[in-house]
Length: 110
Length: 113
Image (cartoon, rainbow over all chains, first blue to last red; front, top):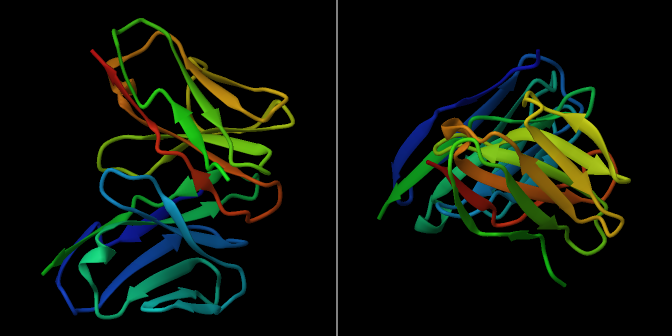
C-alpha cells in the first residue's frame, strides 16, 4: 500500500536557526497538505499544495511540492519559540483515504 | 462560529468495556472523519462519514464503528476495549470536495486500564 515517510523524526534548533522537514510518498500524489500540532493541542491546517513544483510562502514558512509530486518540504527561516510543535504532512490516496506522515517534532532552544 | 467540538475530553475505561465518543462538526461542514493518535505518533485514519454513511475506512478492526446523524454530528464507538486502544481520538470536519482542509477538534483522551 501507499507509504509516507517524514524526516527527520526530531529536530532541535537554536532560536534563529533554520529548519526543514521532508515528506516522501511511495506514489504520485494529487495534492499534499501540511499541519502543525502544538504540544497538547490538535493539528492545525497550514497549507495545501497541488501543482508540480509549486512553492508557497507564509511569512517565514516556505512549502514546496516536488516536480514528480512524490515529495514535499516545509522550511522555516529563523525559527522562533512559537514554531515549537510537530509538523505533519497529509496525503490522500486515490481512494480518498487519508494518510498522515509520522511527523517531525521541532524543539527550539531560546 | 463554533469550531469542531468533541466530548468528553477525557475518559477512563476498563478492558472489555465499550465507549462512545461524540463530535459536532464546524458550521457548514458535512464531512466528518475520525483519527486515533497514539503518544508521539501521527494521527491514524479510522473512517470518514458523509451523507450519514461510512465512505472510507482505514486499517481498523470492526470493533471500531461509527455513525453520522442528519445534523452532520458523529459518534465513534469502540467495543471490547483493549489496552492498546488508549490514545487521543481526534475528530475532523471538512466541507465536501477534493483537498478540503481538515478542521480538528481538541480530541478525547481515552485511557484503557
